[in-house]
Length: 264
Image 1: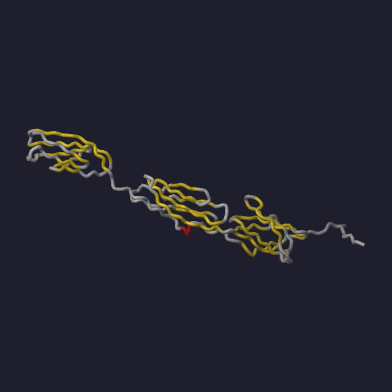
Image 2 (image 1 turned 180 degrees about the vertical axis):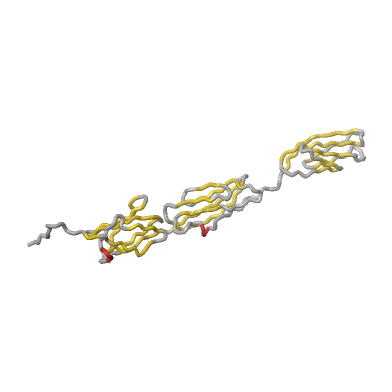
């Protein structure tokens, strides 16, 4: 009487045609690992496909074997958990630059990519733990989307909002030595991109210019009868800069021999 063989994924169960149990049942996989008993089973250490051979011996009288391929699946892959720099700390103080240091985790150890959409149409990409930075060109509110993606495409997302304010420069244009206050002085503000603003001082010599991005500005001043250094001042904004006194360095004198013509 030959044994009847039955094999299912991960375990084998063998019964005879009659009622007599078999003396030996051995299940052997391609990893040279075996299990034995009336019902043979074997735990695998890793997911994958294995060739499993089941051999049955009936008290030394006869034996039979069969080979099947089984696929072993690991536990379900858990999604990542996104994390990183706190939303309230994304902006570098007194700048329009945001900096995100990723701290995302994955229980399976498999984060494949981290992306940050900065909210102005630009995106930065890096790996787990990367520090990604971006400098904005304009003031306003921006929604930042931080995404962690694992190796099989699962993702976790968090969203932050940053608010960027513009800056200003204000002060007073004055004569040599700080007096008098000079009205109608022309102030030209330039930065690395060129001229950004031209303003006039008021009747009390004061001036103000707003809607500035953070950075360094040169101020050139022109006023009839007075001379100023070029530039008359260099000011860094971020935060706003107030109380700037810009003094003339000299007074223009009329050329000798010139005189006013009195009207009759």
